[in-house]
Image (cartoon, rainbow, N blue to C red; front, side, top):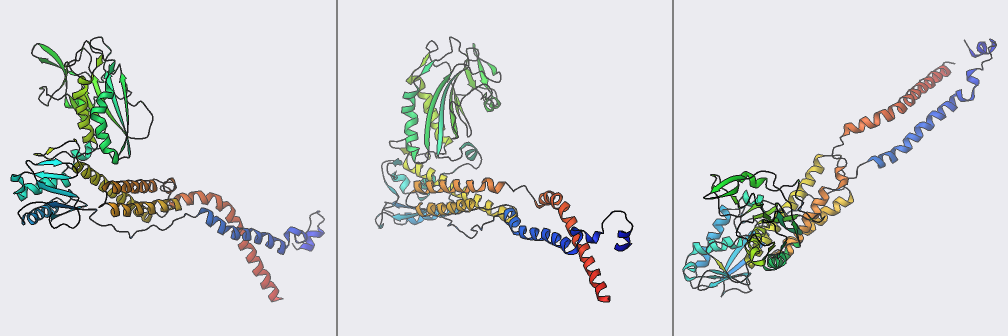
Length: 495
């Protein structure tokens, strides 16, 4: 039916071609306006939804040797230096992990131009002196093997691959040392109300923390608790005419009753090292540590790796007193000082060497500084390599300006650590600690982790329901209008 016939029927309907919104040019203008808006909005949508991925440095390299050390030897045998140097070189080849990042060169004290960091001289006995000076006896100085062994143990102390790494706490700039007197039960015969902790700390702990102040800042706190029940029942032992309690090796691993003991007395994000003086109740006293065969040992303390130390107080203390005096605490805090040094990774004095003065020599302190600096450098490099690897593997991972700045700051700190390593191990440790902090902050940046587990399939799942309902009608209308325009053009051409 044509438009004239449609109008003559008298139905009251208007001819569609006479409607303003049904005119071809108006309909095409409306359709074109939709497409123009979509085309103009595409750049804004692309900019707002794109992921910022700034370039990260990937070609930075570092030197293999971080600490180049020199030691001068004063002796009469000119060939001794070369023999010791050869033995040290062989040790570095056979034990690369022990000498990682350390290069030691020997020189004759009479030929040196500049003063060496370490000096070795003849003395009455083999001992460690102040200011990085080693005195060697006449017997040891004639043996290249003995001298190289001493220098190896002082410069690059050996460490166990399992027990040492599991025992030593992870490096931190700040530590909290919590000393706690725990009474298992406040019974009259086994109850200690006060203790001379300040005097014991000043005698045994503060000198050690003062020497280690170049590595860590320490906050020391103490407390007394009057009810600390065990989470297990100790094994009963018969020792002659008396009965005692025994702690097996399995009991030591679960000795800390975290559910009922409140050992942390303050709120802080700093790592805490606990040192507990445990006073057993009258029922469990005396409490002995037993070996695998069930026999009591002479040990009164044990160390929990990366946590702290526990000292069990037994009958050698006067049970009638409610106060632990300084003399009572001497063996306890002497043991705590040894355990603290072990937890912080302080290398022990080599066997056969005596030490003059301080219980922590410059040799030990330098070895600890180098070891901690090397650990921080290695951790920083591993973290930076992991960042670059993740960014290359995951295309959706954003890399913003903050992350890039942290990576560049970490690299700059690493270069400063290498530059200052020879002059000052303490500065090298400080820069390496900053590098590790910057690298870790970049790795755990919230902006990087936000899209780590958001693959491309999730984008399709979000955009498809949103744009399909809009795009399908527009595409169909565009195709239909284009076909109508072609038919109209074809009809005009025939006329």
